[in-house]
Image (tube, rainbow, N blue to C red):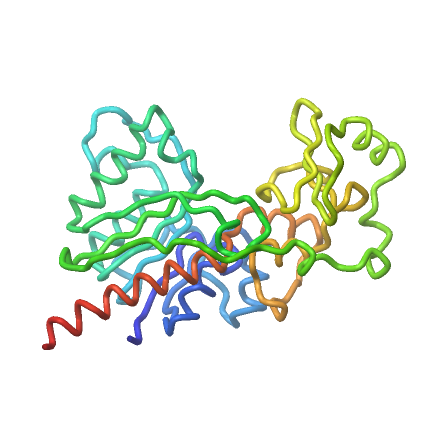
Length: 309
């Protein structure tokens, strides 16, 4: 099945990679951050359109699937359960407006795991109600990148919907083992600027509670406790430079950060480390998206074949 999709809140294109993998063609992208735009353009030969709030839904090309990893904002009139009206003033409203105008066959949205509990669950209820009122059969779940071969504990909420209510869809079930050693560079090949000083190394060792596995990524939480794990805790855009340390001695390199999100080796790095850390922290785990895309297209093809029989 060949299909067209749009890539909203595109970041550096992780969702796009997943849907191109199953034959999709991107016909429109939007991302407001200029540094993310630079990375996106270097890898896809296309500069995303800017602020989605300033783009008329009617001006967006026709497409089969809408994709977006939208930010979670507090809704302005939360709690009244008025569906579409309650989303005004939020970035989700822009997604809903495009769905209302263009009526694509399907959509996939990604957000943080905590979306379901935001504002005691009211935010999520309004999102689901809005999507259903727009005519979609909606499915949602939380998936962990660790279950899809990525050595990063990254749990995210995924929402999938179809205009055709006869489509039977199940989210993929991960079964691939992860291997941190396959994504780490040899310390001898890593620039000295990524290694922390002796004081930070000593602090990590002093706060260790158990013998670290090898290899491991050491995570220090707000209270100072250090957890050495055979995988990475979730990458975060705004985390401190020393939030995660490879074997307790150095920061992950730019390539390692991208590998922790499942990006291909030929993905181009064209921004400074500070921006790449932010971009990787904001991105999606590409292997998870690939499996969701595969499940969506398989489900849509099955109904097309049944209708044609």
